[in-house]
Length: 173
Image (cartoon, rainbow, N blue to C red; front, side):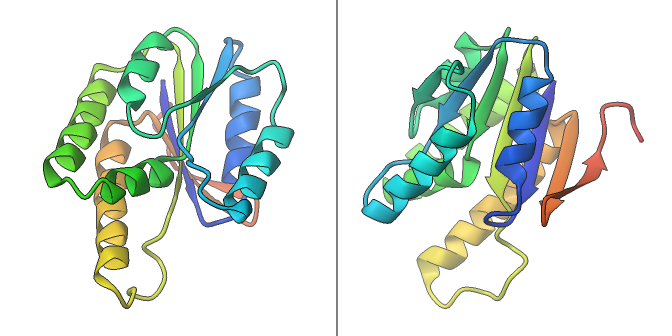
């Protein structure tokens, strides 16, 4: 099962993902894509670490997420977050790498997993159009990536103010 959980910053999407993972009945592993470049980001990472169960192994991987997904295909893998992963790819400033990493990831999603893959990502396309080219590119890339993931995901949830809105359900409701 593949679940995509979208929402704005501090919307409650990570908390919901952790709740779903806890109820999965599977061994849970946490895949963190963040890179801690400054104190503010270190504080954000610490907040996330404190909120999740200590017994969940954490795998830190800013770019090569597909091998981790493959290695954890039988388990519940909570990947937080796709937009940080996309940022890491954009900062490579290598167009071919961006395309290759995304396509490899999407190909893996098409193959599916036997466990539960929970993908957390920031919805960034509902605000004003950014005033610089890199930020506009990020919003465009994130929007396209989310659409492609949503097409293959079994479940898509949008979280606002801690309230989940089911956009796509594995039961078809």
